Each structure stands twice: as C-alpha cells, then as structure tokens.
Image 1: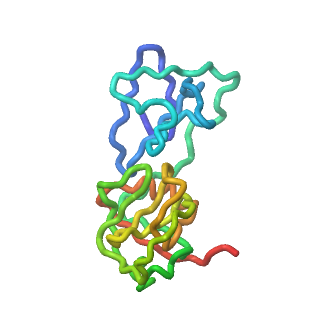
Image 2: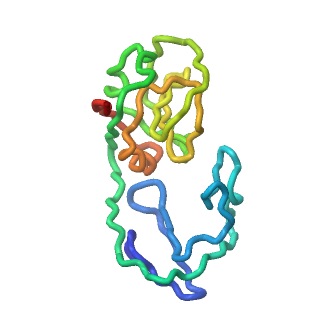
Image 3: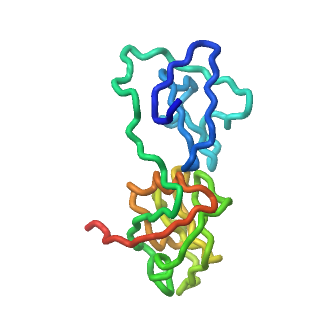
Length: 200
C-alpha cells in the first residue's frame, strides 16, 4: 500500500511500516486520536522534561478515541517525499553571527548529519566553525531552527523538541518553512546552508 494514504483496518488486522526510501521519520495518524490524558495541551512525550505519557515500548497497547462524526474528505495527503541526497536549508544570520570569525564558513562547508542527532537537534559534522569570541553567554530563549555553535565548533540545528533556553551563541536560524525538511534528514546525509535576508 502506498504512503500518504488512508488505510482502512479491520479489528485484528496488522499494519506494518517499512523503511521509507527517503526521510528519517514516519508518521501514523489514527482516526479518533490516541486517547491518553493531555499534558499542557499535548498527548506526546517531551523527552527533555519528561512531561506527557511514558515513552512507547514494544508491546504497548494505545487506546484510540471515539470515532468522529465525519470522515476525512481526502484520500491522499499531498506531502512531497523528503529528499534523499544533499539538502539545502535556507537560514537567516543572527542574532549572534558576530561570534563567527568567518561568516562564509557556515555556507561554504559541506556538512553531514551526525548519528548523534534526535528530535531535540540535528548535530552536524564535516568541519569546525571558529568562534571570534569565547565569552560565555547567559541563557537566552531558543526557537525551532536555531543554529547553535558549541565550543567544539560543530553546529547544532534545533528541531521540534528543542530546549526553551540555551547558552551557546545562535549564529543563524533555519527558516521555519525548512525545519520540517531538516527533521527528515538521515544520519550521513549532506546538508548545505544558504543565507537569505531577514524579515524586517
């Protein structure tokens, strides 16, 4: 059966999800939703804080919510396949771009997604950015897509489960429309950045 499609399962039937040709994560939506208590408006698990339901383990049984009154009006979700080769991400410089000794190094380096990546952030390998300033920063607010520069020089792109604050300089921020594509980048896949003008 194809992906991005509705699947009608009868009681006792089994749905197996294979490894997709491209992309890192597969999403499964269930009509009626997963019927577990919401925490702060969400039914997902926050891996940093430990809020939400327990992490899923093999053999867990999830309760499904009530059948909705109306059925979906689409039979295919119009979502493009994630790229399987080099991924170029648009980003805006700052707010701490002055911590880079060479601003062109971010965009001229052929980065590779690290196997040490998760839903918190995608670590990049393939080069080390030099900091012009080793000053420690007080913790600042973080946003989805922030590119932090740790002391080791290998940048980290914050994804969906990023912390709300951080102490390393944010040298650039991936445009919000690109962050979901970034979350589908597999370990070992190539990443390039293109700097675009900021808004305002």
